View 1 (spheres, rainbow, N blue to C red):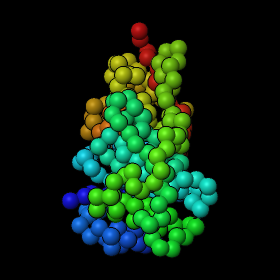
View 2 (cartoon, one colour; view 1 turned 135 degrees about the vertical axis):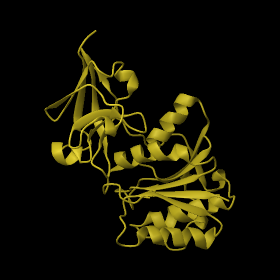
View 3 (tube, rainbow, N blue to C red; view 1 turned 60 degrees about the vertical axis):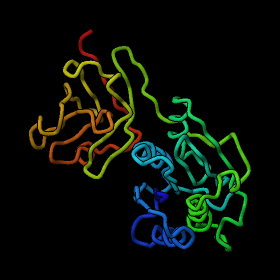
Length: 264
């Protein structure tokens, strides 16, 4: 039984994700559909790409990931589908699959991309503003029914890729960026354990606030305390115990964070 995931910036109020599910089930009634999220910040392709990176690896081989954060819908941007290792991606050619592509490249696993230009696998009428319904959902359903990727479009080798933020070495440490603010107000960065070899002899600077050392978990701090720790994905996160670091510090995705090694 095929699994299809949905990741969009459509929100939950207007029924757009439900319509996509209806299209999929009309073509592939056996498909299981998992909602990753529909609360990506509107038009924030980078947030969508990073969220897909964090979540897709936890799904089984053969999963079809439909991602729609698509400010260029109806323009010359291509609709694409791809096989990325053991998973599939369906969505706009705007960089949403960047992190997955980079992971495949670093692992040396095969990839295949097609430009979706076979309208017999779309809905009969295609809107200029809702390709999630009219192109991407039916294509995902046909994939789930066993239609080969190569039948869905012409091969391409130049998908659009984003320049993902990378930590930069400094004289006494590293400079990274905020990549996620989660539901709890925890602030996640692109810094990982290899950038912070010592838990105690480091200082983290974010929004003019300095935090000395790292905690192992939330409970190692006091309620209301601003702490730094490695989150469940191994990323350096700044948190308020039982509170919201984002509300306290007023930072957003893209803000710089600096880590300084206090002793060599």
